[in-house]
Length: 416
Image 1 (cartoon, helix red, strand yellow):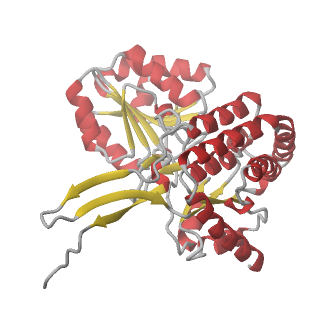
Image 2: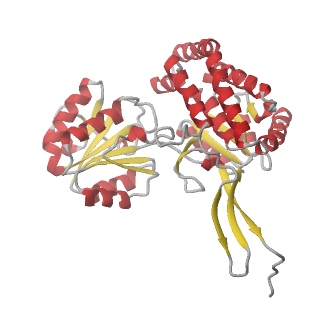
């Protein structure tokens, strides 16, 4: 605990340095971090290949290996994301509200950094760079604790980023990588009151529940992504099929991939056979309710547990519903408050769907795969929140700040 405690105290001190940096200095730092990743490409990809080989030898599941793997195009995307983050508006110092009270006081709400943000994550080595750049641009220090399966990748990325920090006179502790992969370090980290201001876990449901159950500091929760597509009676079948194929098959192992499709009974007999044929051709196993099975006998009968499951694989649960109200009720019962999609040409149905659900992201005639910070204009996301705290949905720079009150007066006092 002593070593971790020392690291966290150093991160707390470094947070003061980052918080005092101006916007242009932070932009230059993040651009330098992006360049450091580009310059360190060979070392990073070599380290990642070592991790991927070990994961294959350990017979890790395909979803984890997909999240773990870096290749030149994925690394290029990380570099591009950092450069984009560097050019985003700096939220620190933003006045979100200002008014003058009848007594002459000027009352403002102003964004300030959170302080020290801890990221606890599995596989995803891109998080090491994304999280570091977002936290630093928002004026925070960051403590990173990745999983053992990505240790070599994370070390290589952190080494490149530390070089950029050193060149800009920023303490290395502003980006602290915890290399001890013992789960007990997680418990100690999330109980570090006064040293950690916010914990953001990214990984499987087991990791997130462990963090939440043991934390004594605030935690952003996102247990799983059970994303739905509802094909309304008025949907354009070609459009709905396009959303389905993109949402399910482009990257099945990510949290914004579709896991369940709900089809209005009025369109089910014609839409489901075409959809199943296309999905099966792309290697997707379809698990259907009794009505789905009656329409297309080749589907696998679904268990009730399939509705609400996050497969992270080429598996899709399908249910026929009587109307939009039943679709909404199904999502309310089985969803995870992540992302829901409706395919419809009926504007009233779209509004009913939007207002009937409380999920963090609701989409009309657009793929669930757009539920991503980068796609929504945040540059890159630090995570996705499905807990109703100061942030909800994909989290970017602004979500890494808090608002405080600044009151300016001329000697006003309150009597009584």
